[in-house]
Image (cartoon, rainbow, N blue to C red; front, side, top):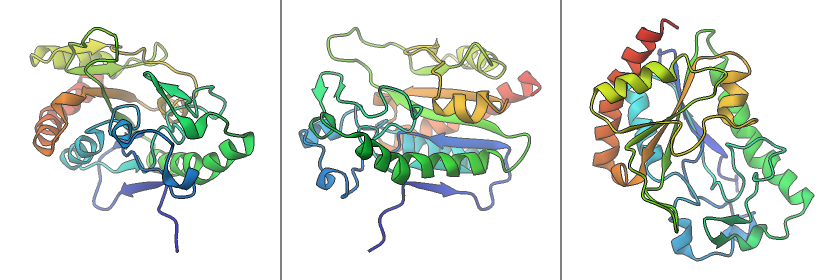
Length: 247
């Protein structure tokens, strides 16, 4: 039996220079990883710790609006995080937002290497192939964030735009356009926008490709109607921001 793919992509009839990426699209645990069970309660696998809730539906709908190719991972971030560099200490998480990931507590170097070979690297190879398919490529990375971490204050932002100090050419006009549209937008909120070795660093900052990372608050895109609403709202703002940037 053929093992499920580490990633999926849609490329046909997608002429746009945009490329939509979804690093944390699903909470799937492959059968060959700890028998398909990371040793935590199934309810925990439905939380933001396992994947970016709503990001896949949002990203697919946004790519449709932009006529853009799209690529997404098909494994939980708790198995191995595709938005981390291979040498990042949080590549395979053992504790996340108060939950101990039992199957990761004693993982060996060989176990990490297998997950890299079978999941992490194939995804990044596919992403880079699509990114390099045209010289004017623009990367739009889609993520989502939980409305509130355990023991922390609620997060008010509807949309967060994350960007690195190394390249804010697209992010800054996008932030301005979102604010003008009446959206509660966070500038590098709820996280900092630069992490060495992450997907944007690897596929956009390093090669010099224009880029933006968008985070939607998960309660806004928890169902299909919310995902489609926000995709339709974001698409023209993204297009306008790219035009304003003159990239």
